[in-house]
Amino acid sequence: MRNLHLLLLTLSALIALPVAAGSPAPTPAPIWRLDFMHEGGNAAAETFAIEQLLEEPQRWSGPTQDGLERGDYKVELFEIGAAKPWFSYSYSSVYSDWSHGVEATSSRKTFQESVRFPAPANDSTLIISRRKLDQEGQPFERVWQTSIDANTKPVTALSELPTIARDLEIHGAPESHLDLLFIAEGFTEKEREKFFDAAQQASETLFGVEPYASLREKFNVRALFLPSSEATLGGDTALKVNPNALGMARYALTMEDHRLRNAAMQVPYDNIVILTNSSTYSASGIYRAYTVVPVFEPRMRFLLVHELGHHLAGLADEYFHATPGYADAEKVVEPHEPNITALLDKKNLKWAHLIKASTPLPTPWQKQRYLDTLKGDQSWLLEEPYINEVGAFQGANYSPTQYYRPTLNCLMLRDGGDNQFCPVCANGIREVIEATAGSDVGK
Ligand SMILES: [Zn+2]
Image 1 (spheres, rainbow, N blue to C red):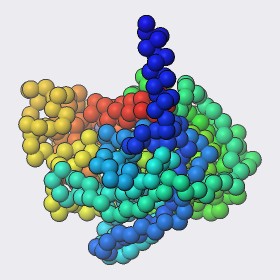
Image 2 (cartoon, protein in one colour):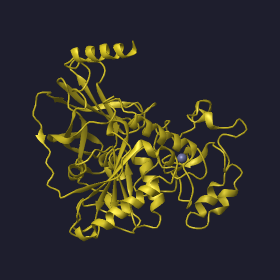
Image 3 (cartoon, helix red, strand yellow):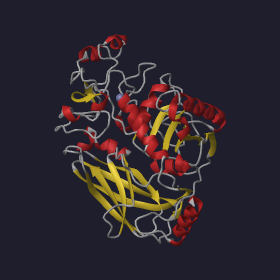
Image 4 (tube, rainbow, N blue to C red):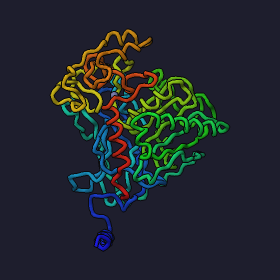
């Protein structure tokens, strides 16, 4: 009977074609990508200018609804007249990163940006919303919209980049796995094998840390070689990664978003790690944009997992020492990130279920001693009375007073050599992996 049931279900699904309103084209749909320029700053409105709509060579393999919403922005696609979006995806970008800095208060800048989504079955409206960080609940507010014609013929995205892809480990279909991609930057043609070896090393390093270790089979990992003319960052490299981007030392970014997408689209991917051929401490991680990691830096383990904490899971920095370019928030509301709190409502602390009744809130610790020993020996931290407890420790998110973090020794706070993610961050990472690998497409 069960088989007959299945057969009937399958037949009725076939008869129901074409796809009902409120869904993407039959799965797996082609990937469409809207490339645009995002401009703003100087306390004036932000603007969006479309460059082109492209169709990428891969098929959509990710979720179509984002239940986590960890980014500064949200892109949604609505069929005409529909109240609910058939596609929703939260993300951050180089633009949003820059817009939080002090430079954006006195100047305007333009950045490349793109959003990817499954080709629509019916005409849709694409809406981009930005999070209002100073408002209660940090709600999203619409900043731009454009029409997407389902019958339009997008430009076929053709990459002229001489990429070579290699599978590092494949555990299953892209629809049911998180597809992680390592891309080469600053490796010359002669250094191809050096890159693939480094990518393998980075992959092993990542899966040596929880929760990646126990969720390894939820991943597919690929490496993409892209030759650079020069091996020095700042020179003629393939992705033009600048190791002192946005005027900040040790902050590595590429402004070539569209070039990066044209390289990455050769293989299925959910998350990108750009591995630079460098041993100099300069890195970044932007939620669902990309991560940059100097693969030969001695602290590569920390940089890789910390920056992926931002890029893959949307975690906040738990460190709180003064950071150039960032100022304290004028008005403090509860932040949306899962691993920091303003502790305005102790009773409803988002990680309350992990805190023992005997642990005081805020949780006492030697904050000044920590700041005084930032560049020295901090082994004393491991002797703190609450070292093994989850609590609410003052100092996080670039502010020593406004925000609190869950533990004393998390990888989102510091490089302790062999320290781990706190239980709150580990949960935050696990949630994203489950949501991405447990995609609602193609099942
Ligand atoms: Zn943490």
